[in-house]
Length: 285
Image (cartoon, rainbow, N blue to C red; front, side, top):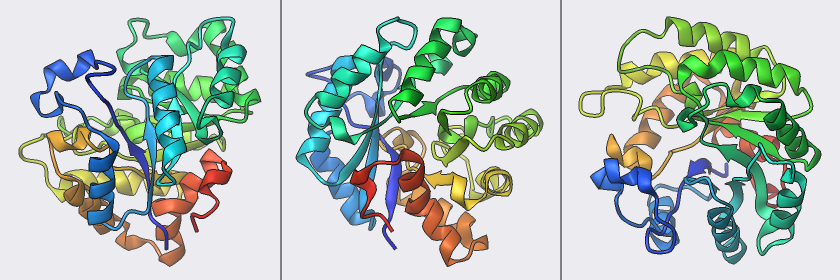
């Protein structure tokens, strides 16, 4: 079984500052490809999809160039300004850039956008339609209270594949998952939506979380989406705020014990290969 990490980040603070890291001393340095490859080697991970951390075309071009230089990075989730009328032109430029064949999805930092109804804007939905026309997916990163808007948007755009990052950021630390559970159940009814089991340790109490805190979330995601619409991601290096890569993998492995061999293979690689639909992922079994 080939293991694919569906959610990692890389950034070079010298080339492209990431102002948001100023709040997190552990992340206030560059995380480059050689370090990622070492981490993947140490934990038996064969390949990875790298996801944008800043909303800029420049960063996306950097990530595509990195992906062009190494087969280990089998996909890039990049960024374009979805609210602008030139979205199609921007996507075309990315696809023809170095590594452009590895562009698999677009993402926007929705949970940090000053407009909480960003996804509902007509212009943005036109931009999302352009993403669908380009054959790309849209990664959704939101706070849990934004999930109803995600459901509304995904229902309005049935031709676009949505990938919900970090299981919709459940409020694990608060312990009250009732609204999140209901919203995830409704979202999972839409066949054009998949979900990443990623980023959960940083939604829990960083210092005191246990497997018991994460298990109900992973169980609910699997019950709603099934293995074929669930993919595993570490959220490295952001996960380092609460746990190392190996610990994150161990928590997931423990939670996947309920699945048969085919189900585990789906979550650990095959689902990402299918939902991101790129020839670069063809070697993932």
